[in-house]
Length: 145
Image (cartoon, rainbow, N blue to C red):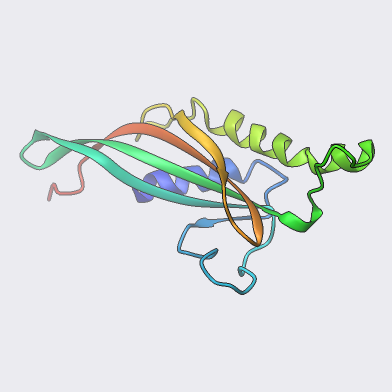
């Protein structure tokens, strides 16, 4: 999983709109301002499915959750919002699209091409949070001597 994480942060660093890329370690669970620079991407990697390939080798499906965090107070999207302000607020969707375009199909010699499985907003009182999930597969050789 370390290999996947390092490849993801290197790839996401190509998106100039992102000011912070980090492992999701509960930064948004506090009632105080999160110690991150916005917009940010928080990454979580899990293995929802693993099966034996050999005694010390498994074939694994990895799920990558990318939480994109934006400053909520700068987003104004009502029908009464002046066009210029609305367009500026909707730039968050441009960033979301860039993250999707950057990660969709991304692969290395260590894992198969990422493919998006879902995306959508998450309720958060302090920030605009948008989550994307990607899946890939890899052969886990870490149990081998």
